[in-house]
Length: 499
Image 1 (cartoon, one colour):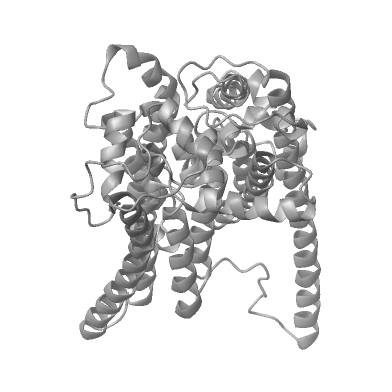
Image 2 (spheres, rainbow, N blue to C red):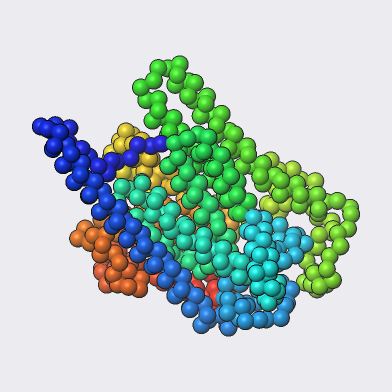
């Protein structure tokens, strides 16, 4: 395990055993006091995270009766009930795709663009709710409730993980607390509550990072990371980039352990490093291959699959490619991603190199501009810190935010060149703690007189709302978060395009 800072520092030069006992007693009392303060701070942060979801739910409830959609996929119509009317603002755009997959499986070709873990969990949770409620709710409402509970539990866990990771990286409880406050009202907030993969994916990724930086045992660390990052890849396609965290942190661990070793032992350590990361990479990729083989077999065999009449009729009515129909990608080969993935992305979403560079897409680039600027600016700050403090500081500080910066740039480049650029907003805020930590650093630097205990004020949207009254970069950051938190919720729940 990476060595941390000791919370109890005993003086080395003492005159008697009595002074040792007194010092330890005093330090023990200080440690107990610090633990109580930490618990109180975390409890306060959790309450603010929950309140941010409640406010978002109320905004959704007000605007979910509006429907400005045009040709978006609506799925098979089912009778409304009280659950749907209460939560329908969370069932827009891609949420309908996940709802349909959870109910009927991958029966339409375009559904294959959505990875399987989230709809599988939705269906499992829906089955449990159906049993508990004795079938009171409709099948679709069971799925919606399942997603609602799953996403909010994952969101709460993610907030605690951000606090832990941030405090480990920065050694600052204030920065860690601000990171959580920013997370609670992040610009992609509506997607963390809707039937989207954001909450689940964020939780799995942060859990993997937490295990990498906190667990000392190889036999615990790598199996857990393999499971978590495999699950993340089965949730979203960009989960493959999480392998970079394994390469980085395991490499950093090897460097820390062999700085004073002889050359032969260093070579052996390098070989051991390559062996263990290779095992993780192979198993993570294999998890996706299982899904790939299964769906390829179902779509590319000659046997017809019996479908419910309503599902088949809807597919014919909407001119959708139904399972059992000839598809062009059956003869294609792909090493990592399923053979159908790139073909479907290109055919249905125009995902290709410079495919999004069109005049009519300029508003989408403008919508993503703030988060792109923040990503580049924060990356420059990280690199400057590395150059200023040196390699030894970098190694001893868990790599600082460098792995998150590299990961964010790896997500940004294809967003600018290949896929829908506006999606980068929700991808970056659900894939990495990077912007939460680095923007929190900026807010901390510009509020030196504010201590951790002050962050709980005011009661609603603490600290961040106070920054709106300033005339510096703090105001810019908080205004961006608040604007997208509210505007994004209103637009998304009204079935208007937003990221």
